[in-house]
Image (cartoon, rainbow, N blue to C red; front, top):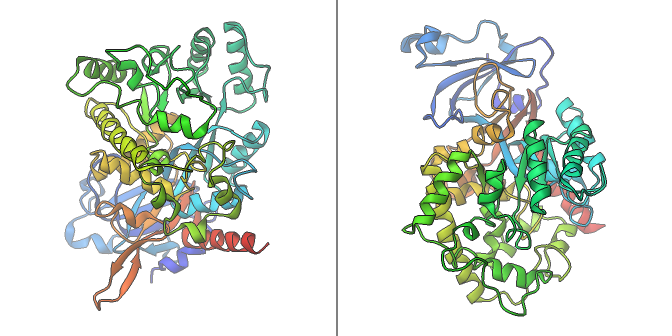
Length: 503
């Protein structure tokens, strides 16, 4: 007799003992259609076999499939998952653990991520905490010593954690080498003097390190996204630096005479006009830029989710998960304040929201056109800022990619295999294939039908008797073969928020 989902919640795999997930429908992350029922056999943290009804190589005929369970797996290590969907573990390609002024505990963040099936994160920048602490968390997560997604740490260029801020090209190269020696797998830029950034990117390539850039409004006039892509930048983050590379009737974006970048509300109000001022799909520079960007192999990580509040601030403040899942410290951080990054929604007007809606229309078209030309797009949520929340906003990002025109299978690929390719670990994870790490997500609903069912609060629905119910949510996350009860992780996150509120 096979064991059940409830048994799987508390299962602890043993070294050298194979175990199996049986009769699930698999969405493998490659972009191929779902298939099943299928069995996945796991041994010592890796997928050893995938057996599918349609797989002729397995020698399984339709008539005897159900009787052909993996012989190497004892019945007490087999789990029946009929009617459920199995996906590769999600990778948040633009994540932040959170600084002490944002969250009370990193464990709280980890629970929210695991509760949404996020098994790896690209932590871009180590913002607000020392890199020594970040590198140690990355080491422990990879070793299975920490109940967390596996962390791939990037360090912000010029941070003093590893070396003095560079002033010359040679010093920039030395800084990158020091970052690598301290455990950084990549470098996060906000832009820099061209000599420094060009040298640093060359060193990243020489060391096979990743690179990402948030082209800030201050630095993009010296090096926009096209220029940095030509220098070898790995990924372009957010919406900045791209429209500016396609201006035809101006060199710089127009801003009011009184514009002050240090004013958060003014900064984001004007950021909403960057794409509106730029090219349109019918303009030659639109296609020329896209073609060159794709040819250079640069990846886009748009992080639609983090700016989505600018389209409807009231909705963002009142999402149904806010009360139970946003901790008091994070709620305070989101409250409008002149000196907190992204907390700018005081006197946010209808005109501001209309401008951002138009910005999204153009920006989403650009990202979709990039993908249609063969460019790689990854899902990243940039949590901890502008009402973007850990885990929940990753699901928002998937929905926003769908809004941008990506088909559901493309959306899942952006969150799995494409993100693994960006990190250079697609031989290790990102799809459900034999030999890869057992990074998996188990869900009760079909996310290709409704991405909302991936949310930790599920989807508002109705049962056959007409009663209103919640459907969906992640059931299990598997991180390098370690089983995590996703529902328990979310319950513990709720309990943590409640305890903080009472303190």
